[in-house]
Length: 294
Length: 289
Image (cartoon, rainbow over all chains, first blue to last red; front, top):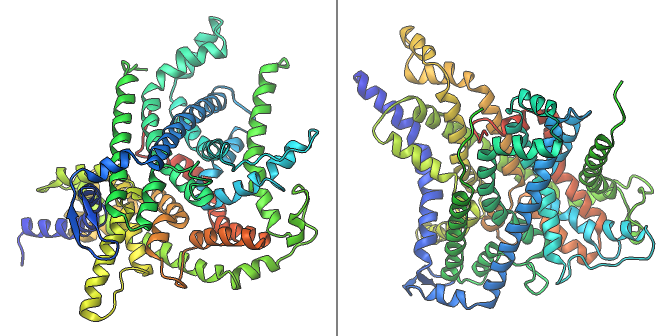
């Protein structure tokens, strides 16, 4: 019979070991591989590798397709964050501050895009953006002359992506902001409105400062998730086309894998990873304020 | 009696517009799935002329969506079982026992929250392919790629950080009296954990099942990469994506929209039945302002 301490240790070991093992094999080791492989050249079909130091990165930084993909990614991060945040904040404020009739109904509806697969959303938006018989063009044509905008054309595709990404994300962030806004005590609003403050004034002087911590956290979420969601949408909706006009860094990275350029692909991954990390850090530093207690 | 206010009217108008912008495209897809092919040339804002169920039977048979659905069900169910069986005991021990390496493991799982699968899908693929090559040299055939069980295992592994984090923050909040009472009554560690503690954690377990179900059912990047054999099986979203890219060239819209309905219907039904849990669960153990 084992003694008590050994029994406890054995129990803990058996509980923790499977999770730890799986985590190391399928998450930590591949993450380590991304960084290691970016310094190597690897055969497309054999596992032979040769060390090339920073060669992959050098080629990458002068690759026009990669530069375009980076510009698109940065544009998407900024546009999606700004638009989604403003909309989500405004909706969350109205839903929590004014007891909107059917508020719960709206909340349920706005969250729907979040539970759909990106493939499904891409399908829905293909129907919307179709140039000949799309929902958007025929809706706009109803106001007069016939409109045939190529929503997935080379000049417009990136804006179409922004709309799809915002459509998908607004509900999620709205629910998130609502949770933190509902913690703001009602008495603050009451005394403010006694003093004659407008809704506008209330929002900027009470709500915004009090949910600032939550707002900062979501900024990091925005950066990380826009990089990822943009990839999912591009893969299912545009395949990076036309002519690379909608290519983003992660889809660029994935396509290099299809060509068998694994080291090159991983170097792109490393760069975007470092970029997202630095950007989150900078944004976090810039938005730092004294935490208000309430 | 309240005065009519312009402000409220504008707020309601904006909310209604946005609700329409969300609902209409989704409902439109449902209607479109009953349309015959010729109805797609012309005004899209019309109701289908009849309920053309053949789109669904066609999607099931010729587009193999039936087979893909079965694969999706198998993978999602397997991955859910795996992630629960593996992460529940781990989360319990990590949050309620102090042992050597406890803090390091907790920190590692936390760091795992920031590892996104999109970055590591290629190394996972290469690792499995190399493994397959080794197996081929020894046994003559490999089984790591194009295998539903391995796919489910990868899903479970990538969901571990989130699941362990959520469950252990819930376990950490439970009082220690339960375990002490159980030990005094002569229950062992394992019995206490399974019979006393797991039932107590039911709310967080439900949250975890909901979120993981949605992410496994909807996932397609890993699935697309690990199930790549020509003519082999696919999961539903990947099958749908191939259908979307293929059918637009062949102009068989009805079947494509039937496929869309097949993918989103299970998630919509689940959402409608448990929507409150889902939007509340989002803030369990997550960020709070």
